[in-house]
Figure (cartoon, rainbow, N blue to C red):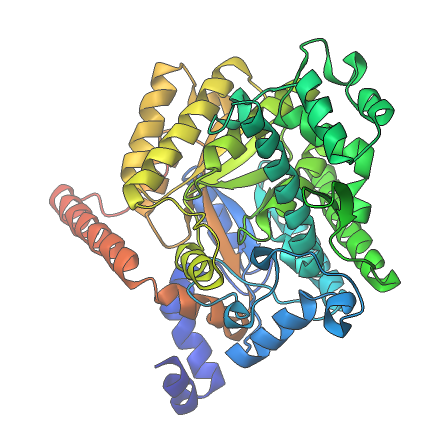
Length: 509
């Protein structure tokens, strides 16, 4: 329909039609200036903005697949000259090269070159400036796949996953299989013995790893201690090495990296640093979006490094936790505990997740465990469990913050009830609520008028460059139409009430 309308009407009339209907409902405007009236209007009703430049490249599936395979494969893998010890889960697969497939509520970036990543960074910088102009408590959303070659995210994710897997393997040997992440504590003496038998390091080196200075005097190592040891002993962000149970050695995933690949890793980190510094300067919070599970361990870890640096006085960087994942609770509890230990401010956004169908299909096709909770009810239970844990933390830690990003009215009611029980007051601005622009206004605006910090996720950008993303959003038929019916009923009831009372215009309180 969009294609035919554009051909029939011509570009100018087509743009006007979109702004009056589909585009105009879900998008704030074309640029930083045109979005200002909507932002001011929402702000008058107590509703803030999470700005998101909604441009998505209009690629064919074949073009997207080609770009993905090129950008997720190293030179050593392409020419076969390097030893490849990669897991299938963390390699690009042609059948899933188009990462947009089955994803309806998240934009997708495909790597072109370093200049394009610099262009994305400049766009994010302009978003930060635009948000800073309209309020002193805004957010902008960023995706790390926009800022660098995804090959690095794949490889780094595999390294982090294999080290965590190795930790749990040691835990199983000590009779601690199946425990929650924060409950798993390895006895240092037994761990030293196991590592020595594997031949990963000499006994003298191992004893130097596990000292009272680095681990305290508990005599045990938990997963956070383990992470700090990995950092200091292997410098994995540079060398990307993993323990091998077969050879008893620390081995690189690939036998070599090109000089350009090393530079690409560095540039991604530099772009993140530039954005965080600008956000700190302007007073805008950065919300790092979650992405596919084969990228997510690296994204979460790089976000953590930014939090360590920039969340010293208040939460400037927010990590995103996807609660449809089986390990969501472990990830949330580890993040909260690390912030406690290192004395920085925890900031998180809790979502259900955007990649369910794609993740399930990929796991089944390639042959690894499905990372997603088995049912919607299980995901709801996980969301509420993670949320309850964070709210309990907020009760004792006034500098921690959480964004409840949900269109689910039951989740909002659950949050409000727990806030009341825990004496978390809206005026303290510890709990934020978030919904997409054009959806669930019956949640957002009453919360804003009642004094709760609530934000709309606000996409903006030129009509033709935002439509590829919006077209996929339109495929969200069942949930979108269900919500639309609910909103339509409420709108009719409100219209009738105003006609009866003669109070036709609503003024913000």
